[in-house]
Image 1 (cartoon, helix red, strand yellow):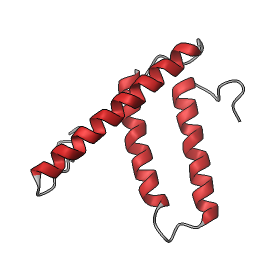
Image 2: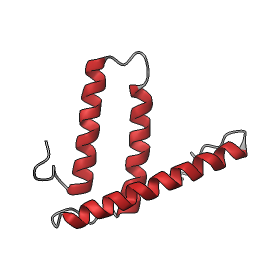
Image 3: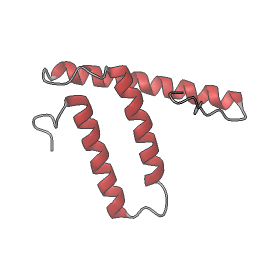
Image 4: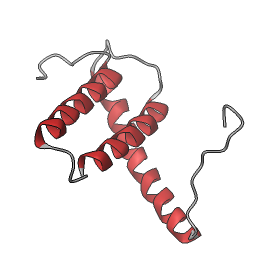
Length: 103
């Protein structure tokens, strides 16, 4: 609501919203734990944004990317390039660069 507009989405079925929020919460908790553990093993990893904020952002970004990748109009070359870029964004966001020994 940064610019005065509320962009939150709600379906017409509150039960569906609750289910989605529960699933997202559980998955986000797993992502946050993985980010926190990975950063703890790499002393040069950034400390900001914190694992919770980063986990939420990466989850939403990945979800949107996957929705695009599942569209029939997305060709194999584009799909491969997008997946490679997504993996690189995750690595750099979590570790600050590509971790040693990766790729």
